[in-house]
Image (cartoon, rainbow, N blue to C red):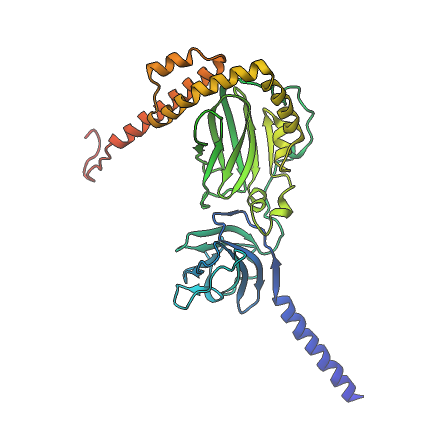
Length: 389
């Protein structure tokens, strides 16, 4: 009987030891994150133990490209803590060993071993200073990073009669006020607006300054209601903008970022990534949760019918043939010649002339601003100079 009791006690002890070890091992599959500035590396799995933090990652690139990582790579968290890279499999640290290369399918699965991250840390940032890879807000405890979204944004609102704009040419300045929910000024965020107008030879790219609180403001000249792309690093939010109208957009940064991820994209493709107030709410709301919009398709159908009527189509084609060369010269010189102005006065649609002149004025102002910056002189005052001096 005594032997049986000892045997049972031994089994209990072994079970408890195994249970403790199991509790110490924490696995996070395809961890969510707030923002990434690279398409070259994604985290597939994070395994935390008391001995190490293991990261199973996927490298992306051109087949045959060597994969190297800096020994300064680390996981960092809010209170200044840091887990340094210690070992790596299938990727060379500092190029000391012969690096493996990206495989024929454009990927290479690697394993990184960092020093342990404390169990009470719920998110980390991955920093690779040599290559400039940054992934912010990687989740260790929850599937999706927490972002405060005000209740009034998610409450259904009655549709307004002016939500779908009238198709056709309508020159004016579109205004966007934005709030990036989940943004932190420590993050390396590149933001710009991109769109084409069919007249100028290149796609317009307008950089956007994001304030410390994650808000931004932009204004852009449009020839007609236009589908644009708001780019936040590698992620893109489609925005349908209307001339002489204003829209406010609230962007869920983690969801938008993860929708651009190869590992998480399908999971977040159809989740709501932004909320809107103002012009074309219906179209923008649908675009923020789906690659296409029924409202936008309906708008395009009406627009196509309007623009393809024989009389309108003939006049538009004639105007475009005359104005496109002018736009090319304007792009190169940032000014319109007197001869070009004479041609613009003869176009069938005055909206086209107004639009080109508005863009020309904006380009001229920008050129003058750049010139003034070039000529500016920064003077440093001596430390002894004070008061009226």
